[in-house]
Length: 353
Image 1 (cartoon, rainbow, N blue to C red):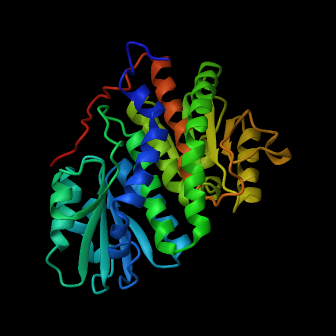
Image 2: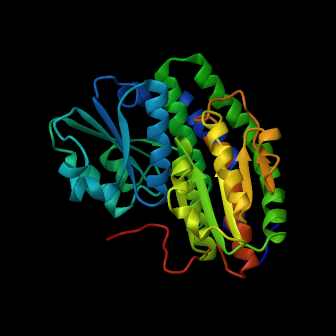
């Protein structure tokens, strides 16, 4: 469904399954050697994923996946930390791979960060983008998500496809056939999840009166919780916050009251503990939404549950299946507030300084 508002954003959210399929094809059939040169190269003592805004949040999911699947050191940092306070942000003497993450490949901060270390003997740069002719792609060897390109300001399918493509690259680097198979399963499942997420989010937003949005997640889902938070802010100008699931109990929970949405991105790894947090927030008057692989008796207390399937998959592989419903919630919240998600105030698609 489209209206006068959201005519760019809606089809981009809705077409992310095609973008994922193109991303995995690009990786497997055109850029597999990128993996062995960079992500799969064990000579690097540290891998740092950098980005700004949404790109930084997906960098967190990329780094978490890298650590879990490859058992090697990786972190995510804002791009500005590298070119402004590098010595305080990382151990510069290590042999380091710096991975720029940028939809446009034109963000000033990521370009400055990559260029600031390009001549250093122990640093190597590369990147991931949706634009193969961008500045970032010109100064570094980039993995490309060919159908991730967007006209809208707010990142949706670009973020999903780039996150997925990097995770697929990490799966290839692991040489574990099971992980690569998981990524193929995710690509195959995504279209159905996107379709279900659309109707679910529309009904959920229309049926609830919410004035605060809180997103909770752990591990690879913490970056997703930050991204979900940003989607609401960008599209609808509603104030939101995101926290590590159990961290929310240590002070921030005082803001919970009727009208507060607490959305839990439920992992299987920490499921029993995370569910307890959501149940506690429900008792304080929150409207609780749980996004999960599969509902059960332990989630019956929730006001709403969106199932993405794939409980047999790792939490990391399942990450991008959580994104469509979070993006549609931002979209339908904007429409409910009579705000155009295509043209968020004060924002441009590419941020330059």
